[in-house]
Image (cartoon, rainbow, N blue to C red; front, top):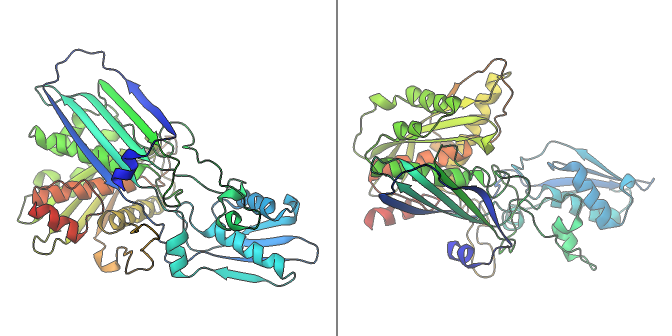
Length: 447
């Protein structure tokens, strides 16, 4: 898949950021790296479902756990050839979507069936195999980084180039984004996917590092061809981009013999960003930590979308060199979401995102061959189990009177990077391809 992404002609090449260095300085060394994240499932533990009824008045009522109820209703109305006023969408509690999974398709399928049996409620729920094989996945991405350093190890020129398929194919009022609508007798074509919004919105979300580099360029190769169905998954491009940025910052720090925390602070002018890193490091006990055999520490940081909440994550891991298994021993996260109204809610959001990101980074990858998706159940697509969840401490940085920044998906990216950085600290081997499965770790250790 990495080779396919790099070889496929992009629909658009976007200059997400172009900042040519105007300050003096001589590059004495150039360092490059390439990172990869695979396709991810939403992997909701409960499968997607919907209930639909065509009433005697000709009104179709659809109960759904979609995250885009009104737009999905518009798409269903167009798919069925009904006036929009004849389709009533009702949001009900269901399994979490974390973006765009099969919930909208379940609503459309229930609606199609309900039209065939007027007056009879139709409840539709997919099997585990259907959910795993047909949901729209989070896009695979390749990110290449390059930095030019001066004799003191300062970054003079920073370049990040990414390749990604779409991160958004929600219905958006268009039936072509409903799976079954493409298989009707008169099928609806799928509309051309868009990257969407300003920089830092979709594939390039968090692709612009928050660090202050004299030269700073970000280039996005947006590929609309999709070997697998893809759409919005928690964080969109942020998880992969922050993984690459923060892994590369760690590589640069080690290459010049600098402490990873101090090296990040060297390039950060944003005081709140600096505070987030320092508070996480202090709570972790970064300066007092002593290295022991098989154990390592790592840190990662981001300001989500560069406009939302700040988050830094520090982890301690243990790597078994015989089995390749990584055990996360403890996790510390700092969160600055502006004025905090609900401290427990902020902590829960940071902790939940951290745990899901550990699952992505350690285990999750959609497997396929030339004909089908092979990840059909929890055996072929494992997720983090309760016994593998480490103790998590969240440091809340309250900013009374400051704007609300939101917490959302702030911990997804920093967690993945912190884990990879901790594994490097424990083993001396840098892993740039996710997930960090035991087999992949063993392969790296033996290389």
